[in-house]
Length: 559
Image (cartoon, rainbow, N blue to C red; front, side, top):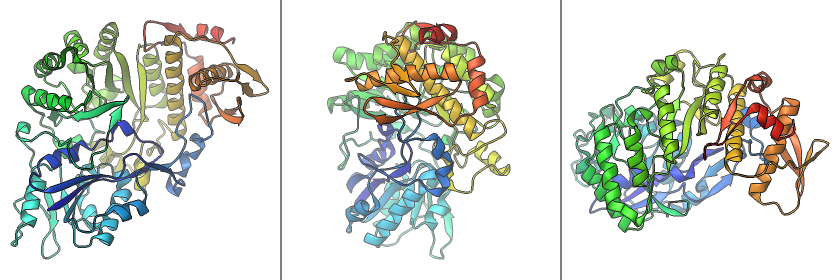
């Protein structure tokens, strides 16, 4: 059977391209031995600017394409991946089965577009869709033209479906996780089942035909998943729909064997995408020791860009991570406020997280701590306090605007309160879908800019650069000739900080001529900006021990 595994394009103001490797499709491919399988990554390597849909135009005042400021937000609405016309040309007309990944509901229109194009070019082919969106809304996906939906894990379900389709007497009722229509057109939901022993699965297929060269920092990138499921109940998280709550681990030996195999294929950067990495501390310790023994001084970089819960970490584990090849540490805080942590089910103690930060700093990690801006129920002032706290820690602040995930506890609560917008396009983080009296979109975007400002100051005091002010005249910034992009960023940032302290306004820039930039006030919540300026705060570098108070910062830039 000829099978295509499809990662569809998406349309948004932003995407994290280095995390687009479709690991789920590679894992499914490894379970289709004997079939002719090819990856069709229609998201990879291309982008095209688009007009902003009417449903998203409310955020246009915050996203200026002509802003060169280091505090600027997103610039263009884009299609990440191939155009509709390109996909139409590339749909194989003689393939038997197409399997489409549909993760985020806000991008479902692109999935449905792909389904329609396959139907147009290859009407006899069967189409199966999986991923979080398909798992939560299978009837909608079937109505959009899919023949089957796989809810949750697909490594066992899809091979069983392929076998059933190859038989003359077709019976789908025994295939776990499958949603389908019977002869009467009725939707049938088969039994949901999770894979008990993850070591029974073959390694994801990095030799898959059609696999693009995913890279990070000019290194070949491989993504690892060592466990599935999460025992915690964070109300905003949708992982339970696809992976369940029971924490299932692969064996240390199995993970090391996969790393060894990938290393010998030339991979030198390994990113763990577990939702609960290191949940078993003894298991994690054994894995890290094994990585050190396996890789040794040959050299490889390890990361966990999906984040690690601080409760899993102590000094011993952090030492072993450094020895194994971790240089960065991504910690998920979400909110530092204890009452909110309890309310949303977070397994985090802020005091412990700060202890981990200090230990990690001593070991030389570059640390990022992630916050959710606009989490329903949390006020803008509370988030500003959280930002102020992290400003004085040796970390970068990783701000994420709250977005909507159907199927979660929080989504259901917001839906019951009438706070879920009518358009699915508005579920995305770049739109900030849920405005409340606690935090408006204007306040959320202002907080996001303040995070950018603080991270710039962290970079500035940690990079041992000078604080030279560029020439400023008549609301213009005049840069000397021959400056590099990094120098331009530094000079514009310093000038805009001076403007902030002088005028009390957060501003960006607009290029008016070569080396000449106009100072442009951004659309912000002025009261929130004033509250930020009136607080006593200090900023600590994420790259060392350097720090600076607000008072000294003002003096440094001549205010």
